[in-house]
Every structure is written in structure tokens, then in C-alpha cells.
Image (cartoon, rainbow over all chains, first blue to last red; front, side, top):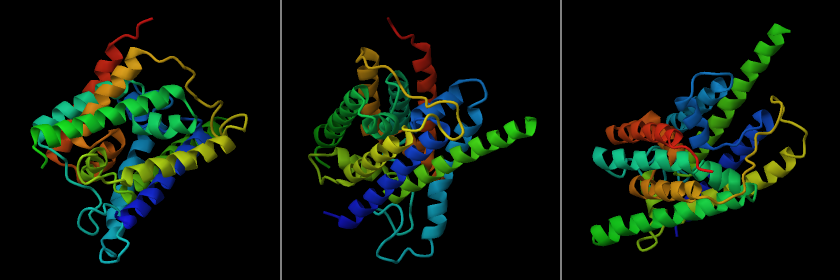
Length: 160
Length: 147
């Protein structure tokens, strides 16, 4: 097992948890990405659009800051960001081409819209509140994700 | 009085930015902005990558403690009330939606957070996914909830 990746995962996870606590403490909001951005892009601008847009800009600038910081220390053992890729490379390559990603995006948008949440809203925030709805949603998307990867990689892809 | 409101609005926006920034840093530090790592976690039959388990575990434990401390207060610092979901029923919309999301997540390795957080390294396929994700959100709003 790659202990460095696990440690970075834990540190990143703690940051995500702190972000969720921060958003509840300051604005009283759940840190669910599909809810925050989904509401921002599908509704007319209103009173609470500003913090949603600011959240999105913050979300985008986080990895960019890490990329800029990681450029200088790429050779250190504790490489920042994407530990699987080249040192300093924070943002990974998409898993498929445009046709696959068009389908995946539609499923993710429709699914998180209908199911009222994604990995952050149900997974991080909902589980922290011990919500049964979020637990059922999280188990459901994890199981379907596992089945999908199994089919794509090991049934269709022949174990590649 | 007017200036006080304006100042509070600006602070609210700043709080939102800080939350997004910490979230984005967390995703990048943990390697979740790399779809290969996410798919590696979902691939139980392959060379399983446990990283996502540490990310979710670290986030949930931290936020569980954080929510316990924060929700004791009568209201958030810059808001009139805590906006918490109140529904407890398990319906087809929730489970069906989560199932569709899981398929899209498995195909791409992107859930909404990492997908938007990766805009700094935008590629054609990622852009395509972001566009249809937004279309999906509009479609979900157009499908009325039964009951």
C-alpha cells in the first residue's frame, strides 16, 4: 500500500471536513458541490448567488495555488497534489474521450440533481449528520460506481 | 445601516470563497483531482487504491466533530439560521438519482467537486462533461417530484 498517498488523502480529507464545518459556521450552509453550483447555474441571480459564485471560484483556485506552489518542490518526497502523476502535476487527465464524458456528465448532473446531492453533500456532510437518506444515497452511488468500473474494466475491457 | 448590510454581504462572499478554497485545496492535496485515483478506488477487482477511503473518512470525522460544535450555537455567524435538510423518507428519486450518479462517476472518475475544481487544467473531455452536467441539473429540476 502507498502510505504517502493514504496520508495525503487523510490530510486532504481533513481540509474538506474543515471547509464543510466553516461553511456551516459562517453561512449556515451544507457544503454540497452539486447543490451549491447546481443552484447557482440553474436559477436566476439572487441574494445568495454571490457566496455560491465565490465558493466556485475558491474551489477552482485551490488546485491552481497548489500547482503554483508544487512547481518548486516537485522533487521532495512529499509531493503536493496528485501523487499518482508526475511531481507537481496536481490535476489529472480525464479517464475518457469526449463522447464518454458527455454521457458521464449527463448522468452525474441528472443523478445528483434528482438525488439531491453528491459525494460532498451526501457523503461528507450527510454522513457527518448521521442522515439515513445520505447513508442510503452514499452506499447506492458507491455500489453503482464499483459495478460500473467492474463492467468497463473487467467485462468490456477484459481486465486491462 | 445600508453600509452595514453591504459590509455583511461582502463578508458572506468572502466566507464562501474561503470555504471553496479550502475544499479545492483538500481535493488537490488528496489526489482526488486525478480521476485515475478515484477509479482506482472503485476498481475492487483491480489494483485497489484505498486513498478515497482516507479522504472520505478524514472529512466525515472532522466535520462530524465540527458540526457538533457549530450546531450548538443558535445561528451561523453571518446568517439568520442553519439551512439543514429536514426530509427523512427514502424515495425513488433519491435512490434512482444516486444510482445514475454512481454510473456517471464510475465512467469518468469525476464527481461534481473534482470536475469543477479541475477547471484550472481544463481539457476537451472535461469541458464536455461540465456542459452536460449542467444540462443534467436543468433536466432534474424539470422532472417534478411526485407525492
